[in-house]
Length: 142
Image (cartoon, rainbow, N blue to C red; front, side):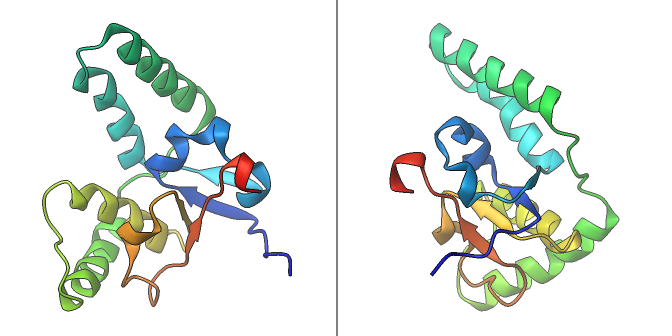
């Protein structure tokens, strides 16, 4: 049975990083990213000492900046974050540290009523009542 292809969806940072290896048919027709993803990509070149990897990360950031007009983490996303946080904490999961970035991206999806595409579905468990989380597939898995 063929999966329904969404018209629009929000890409998690993991999908943006692997975008060239993702099966385009497993993604929505119109791709969106959060300003939070752009922040993660902007930090990437500074998070490695390897010159080749730093260059790859800088290239990825520049391509994302040229391709996407990121959705803001605005007042609607801030309110949605409260709901996301409550769902995670009530499920007994951590909602602090590095995980907060994922939750900000999930809040952006909720605020904009978009499905969230990720390579790391487990990062978004217990949010199914709030957002649709969709696993992006690598091209060789298609």
